[in-house]
Length: 182
Image (cartoon, rainbow, N blue to C red; front, side, top):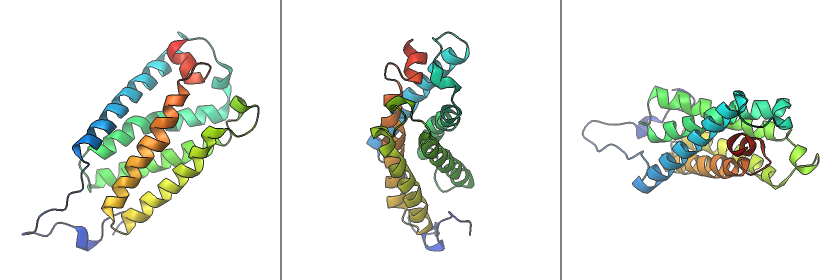
């Protein structure tokens, strides 16, 4: 059994109904809409920034921001895909693990991004412990075979630790905001 595989008792047994591992329609729609919208905004801003179509921003030269962008930008569409695609497959488990690694590195890299608040941590850094706790709970619930809590943790992480801070990244004066609107 792999580290995140389901216990034997949760696997499909012929003659029994298959447990429901999917998201509710409203949650699927919310994740799909948020994932698509944020992915488009991120891609457009990144293309403008990389092609020099947006004003230069000093933050783009900081290693912590580059690492943060390198991990958070692929986490947006990947997280949506993992939650909307078929569950329990080897691909789901592998891409889910990759998504969690991206989220943990994203959160940890944020600790080194302090220019926004004069060298100190700001309120947005509250998402760091929330993300790390969510990642731990996601792994723990999957290993325990508690798929309902696993799913709830992932939805919470995707919307609460990725989408909410992501919206603030597009505020005027922030790097992504400058690249998108500048």
